[in-house]
Length: 106
Image (cartoon, rainbow, N blue to C red):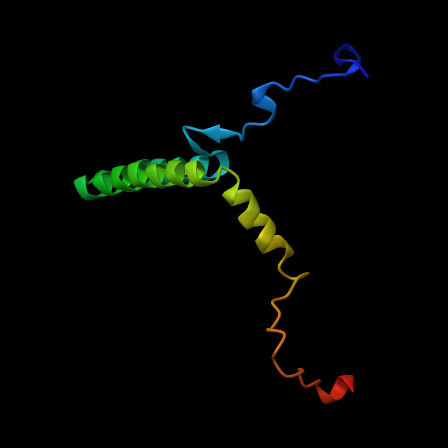
């Protein structure tokens, strides 16, 4: 087989890159800034409320950016974990004694 016989596929980087908004997970960024806007416009305009909304927005956005830098898919993995938890219950260690069955199941 020659090099000219090998089929090569070129993937654009946008097909493999995660979908981020302002550096954080899109769903979480939208939820965060919706909460900030609700704090600003849904309550009385008070310096404490405005400062709380700004601290929450800036701090939350920074935390989402740092989490996306560590692992851009962390939120998808967490959601999958929560959704599949009923199907894969936690197990005890291999050295644990056998579980006692309820009388209705014996």
